[in-house]
Amino acid sequence: MVEVSTSILSVDEKEAMNTFYSLEVARTDYFHIDVMDGKFVEKDTSSLMYSYASSIKQMSNIPLDVHLMVSNVKEYIDEYIALKPHFITIHYEACENKKQVKDFLEYIKKNEINCGLSIKPNTKLEEIYEFLPYISLLLIMTVEPGKGGQRIIPETINKIAKLKEYLYQNNLEAYIEADGGIKTENADELKEAGVDIMVVGSGIINSKDYKKTIKELKK
Image 1: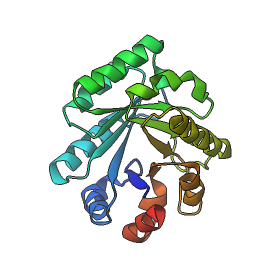
Image 2: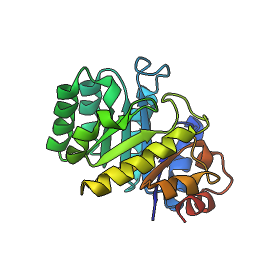
Image 3: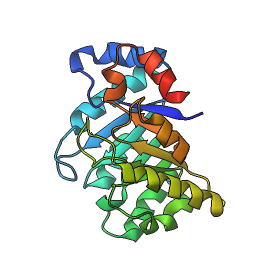
Image 4: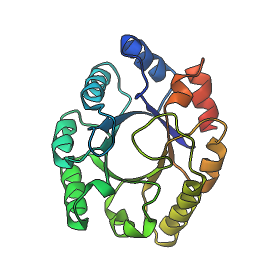
């Protein structure tokens, strides 16, 4: 069964603790932490996301799924290591070269955290195949990173199917995570393509019944 990682990017600060509790009761599998620095992407969520992540760590056993959309990758890895998230995912495009990508991934693993690699919609899969043996998760951005509420880019679904086939053909194991524009209406397409984890933000947060929405996404 596919898992759901709920993005808390659009959570109202005044209602944050109640929302986190409600999401836990609704059986989200992860809390997705969208860390943006205002450089790699336009929006800056770094302070708010760390505050949210710290609060969740104190009140919940639901694991954290940290997605770093930042330029100073090492600084933010170090910041989140202390919270012991389940995943820390870095962006391929934020690294200076392939050696740096591998160094960051190894550093995350050294700290006993599952390492993930993310790629933007226009980045070709072929560019990151060499890293697949070293990662726990590959996050396919199905929209341009940095803004919530976008519509899914259809071509990215084909990219997910291609990745699933490549993993199978090469006897590799890594979770495929998709992030951006995912709702109950298009979830089936993603599941058929081979997604293991769906990141859903406004599609859950703006729904009237979190439990019902998450159940529909998973089934």
